Length: 144
Image (cartoon, rainbow, N blue to C red):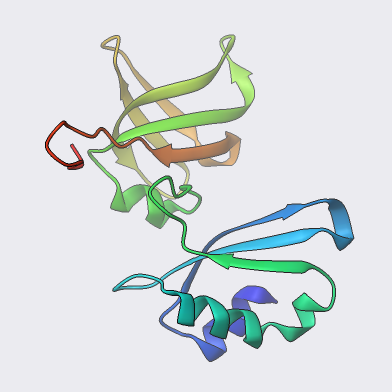
């Protein structure tokens, strides 16, 4: 319902992620993005457009920020070549956390070049969380 409302009222806005905390009457946080960025005015307008949701949840609307989660195949495809941290739903060969350079992405999986020189292909459906890892240098925080 949230995605449909946003697509209708704010076609330029992408629902990047959502998070529910506290159960059915808790807090719903929406992470939105658009070309040119997200400002307070947009967050307020999106919140106002979702009156039905605000009746059931405490609603928060926010930019995804630097540590935006990667959820959809398009998110991963956009970040090819970046350093990515991935946590799996279930361990693979005794390991749940992976970090490496995102080398490939398609509708079903991603491939990381790991720091130890190996590589791993992980199915998207098995990923609990993933995000770009930003490395800031000493002259002002440029993304590597």
